[in-house]
Length: 190
Length: 190
Image (cartoon, rainbow over all chains, first blue to last red):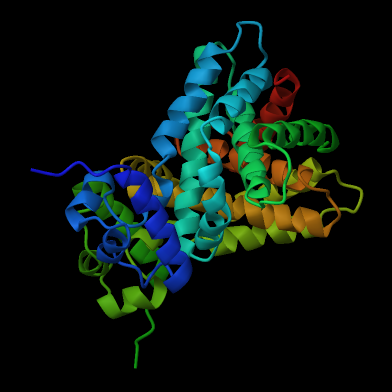
């Protein structure tokens, strides 16, 4: 019988980011991550299929958060207004505790091809979930896909700025600012 | 000494797509692909690091084609006009011989998580190369990134339509049509 371990998932994520940053992604093993977290390898595999997925554990929850907030936006909201509401909902799930790890997380991903590839897929999946929710509320294609892409781009850019501890604005404020900037950029494409 | 094999790369790509379609991606080995192509495993590894990369062999060349065409567009071209020129250049590299494999290629990718992930990364990399070329010619951010994203989206959508042999339009025509549709969709986001 497995012993219940408080915050096992969060401890594993933090241990993994620490080890990836200290000794590199390739040199880090699942056993090493579990040990650093004070847990067993069996516990690790209860939460994650492999060491890579530790860094993308939020994908399912983030997708659901975005999709539910899009669905809950007022019927009169435009696609971009619904997306803005979804960014608020997603930003609200990021605690200050996570902020302390954000810069290291981004640096680890950026240093490794396999992780950058996985990050591109996460971006794609979040945008797909958001686009599906926009279609559900009647947004036509390809506008639904574009609005979703703008939202995920805005969030990624905001997250990178928020990872700097000297940034005074909240993640939601930054996400709105980035979304506004993307919206303005649409005017100069053509 | 390696014997020169005519069209080895192309033969390996076709053998791989055939086998992935016939027996599934997971059940197909590098040895099997090489055998089907009438080549050795050593020849395979001269062209590709693993079986997955066979399907994404064009990424480097496509990136370069897009970037060079953006750079070569007239100085007066808007970001989207430069992107449209890049789509023409990219479409011109797709022969009818490749069209015969397009539908099977898309079906193989769609059936496998690992391949869909890799395809998302290719999309990301093509957009990044295009965006960098747009920045080089003075397009500001985030407009450069957005115009590039629209271009790669248009190409992906056009490629899917072109993979249907009953589609009478050329790949370039379809890409322009998709880009126009994306451009019109920008107006209904807000």
